[in-house]
Length: 147
Image (cartoon, rainbow, N blue to C red; front, top):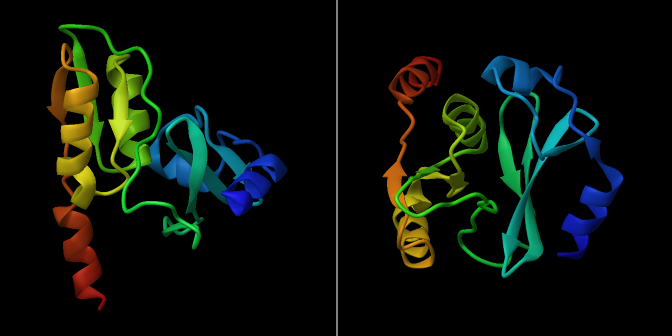
């Protein structure tokens, strides 16, 4: 948590011209920027617990002092009977929120969708939970050709 807080405090609001944001076609919203690195906050019980660092090439890394196997981005604006989207990555969160205006939670990777969905389902029982998966087949096909 100490390293996460230190990096977050050194960072500035993200510039919408950051290459990762431009490539994804999304606005920066709440992440900050440290050099060319995008910082996405992760909270555990209301406390800053980790940062996902997104690099120019799209590579993503968590800090070594990570407190748990999975975490959620904070989710605001959840209303009974309305959709609450859950997805695997931050850029998908931004895309879904910009397209729908609805609250979106992020499991931080596809392997955490089930656990995050269970947590959100118990926390927001009146919301309609919608799992929004990425279609990365083309990305994986392109990467496997170059391997």
